[in-house]
Length: 483
Image (cartoon, rainbow, N blue to C red; front, side, top):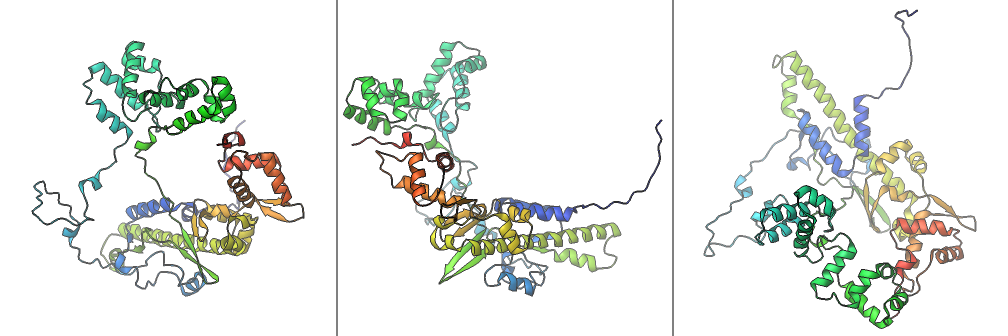
């Protein structure tokens, strides 16, 4: 029989406040994500505002305290946020920022400066492969069906320019015959760049040779019938299969090497996203200096206007004041979380510099084994905090730009009882392969033996795993024929 009753139970449990969850989330954001988060918080919280650039160099009573500045190094790191200093916006001459495009431009007038913006600076997206092919199709005078089919084909080209749709897809879309679908594919394949709309690298290369009038050559036959032997550079077997000499095979391969395996790449409009370091490590004399990168991050401060409203009596209703006080507390916590994030990144980088000093001095070959626990114990934080800080964060060092995760590497025991980092072994493998004879490339087993000669015991399958991680081809694809 079911019985409903009330009972009182006292328990202890860990509950994360929304502010704490926000601080943890900010800790693991990348630089780009942090910029978006700052802008989003400014839009949502009326008490938060971005400090004008003129205030960046001014003192800030709500910035880091004196012990914090001493701890981080005031001369090494720029303040992350502005406090509650009044925001005094300077007068701006908006005419300097206007863009006037005069259609009646005359060379008799004064020539605009070289760095003046042009109309092309305001195009939302640069022309790509699709627009280039579509521009060519508009000059062919196609009928309605061919226009429909060719545009469908253009929409099914991948970034490399290969056709991902088959004949059945085109027939079903255009309600046409297979001959009409094939004709539409041929129309697109006749466009520039040569090799476009091929359904594989092999077909694309054949189309390029056909465009050059080389369809009756040995190069065409090699691609058409012996693509697998070409990929492994087995020229002796190619000579036997085609009945040609190795010299003629090499001449045909030179023709093939001038072709473009991915014809669409040249017209890609994808923008390259460069890594912006979160922290810089400079070597000055015999010491290293750490500097956080605050460029591009909004400087935050509490709105003075709303602060004055809160101080005034009877200026607003109690609900409005309660709303502003709550947002003020959230804004103060948000600014504190940002400061804490930057301070933690600095501490982690300082610890990494201490553990991996040989790397910063001499390069990746001297990277030492390191785990999250080592850094966590050194800076007095939890491993999960160190893991969040090092994810998607990059450091500019004298040896190059590296993700902070890079400095953590598992240990591999040597035959003399010492240990070496796995990343150092990868660097050594890369050096072996870079110095190898291209006609007799090193096998994974040979590399394992060479490492053993340096007292580093690594199995052949481990060498193969490291080589794959570094995107280095196996020995059969690295082999070059003798000249």
